[in-house]
Length: 153
Ligand code: HEC
Ligand code: HEC
Image 1 (cartoon, protein in one colour):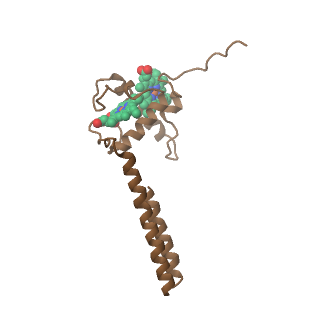
Image 2 (cartoon, rainbow, N blue to C red):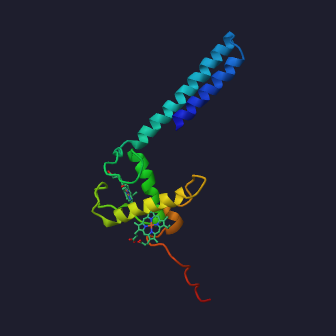
Image 3 (cartoon, protein in one colour):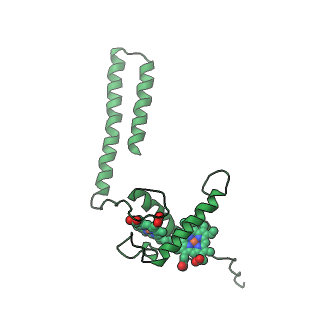
């Protein structure tokens, strides 16, 4: 991300500099500015690597049946929407220590839910994702079908 942003800036600047012509001063400035912006992403990358150090890299999934993603980080991002959407921990749906296992029956329920939500979203004509786990679940494993009775006042 940071990398891309950095490269964009480099392009912008070299483009404007190019328009201004190429006398010696411009050339020198252009070199300095370009060098600075080329170094920025490197620093950012180093920082990112430091943050990731100590954590094991997220392995790519081996047992996906409905999700259409391929990398570990993509899966993790989706899984976070599940935990926050239902207000649960990972092992609500997963066998502790084995995410690929299908032994926890909630995982299969969740697969049906993913398909259901995908189908509902496909009925919206704008192609956007309007219905998420949270839309129904609101941070609870079992969605309410009716409002709570109002507390007596
Ligand atoms: C609401 C149920 C649910 C919760 C909560 C949940 N997951 Fe999942 N997870 C699934 C389902 C369903 C799949 C399989 C999706 C498929 O078949 O396409 C899956 C797949 C995965 C996979 C891929 C395993 C493989 O090798 O195929 C990983 C890794 C994973 N989950 C990690 C997590 C983590 C980490 C958390 C907690 C942050 C979490 N999950 C929370 C339902 C859940
Ligand atoms: C259209 C509403 C709706 C959406 C969207 C929805 N769910 Fe559900 N979900 C329900 C209802 C209603 C139940 C309770 C009935 C049942 O268990 O079949 C439920 C139950 C579940 C359960 C079982 C909970 C338990 O206590 O056993 C899991 C797991 C689950 N949903 C996961 C998900 C995930 C993950 C998503 C997002 C991909 C999702 N749901 C999206 C309506 C929804």
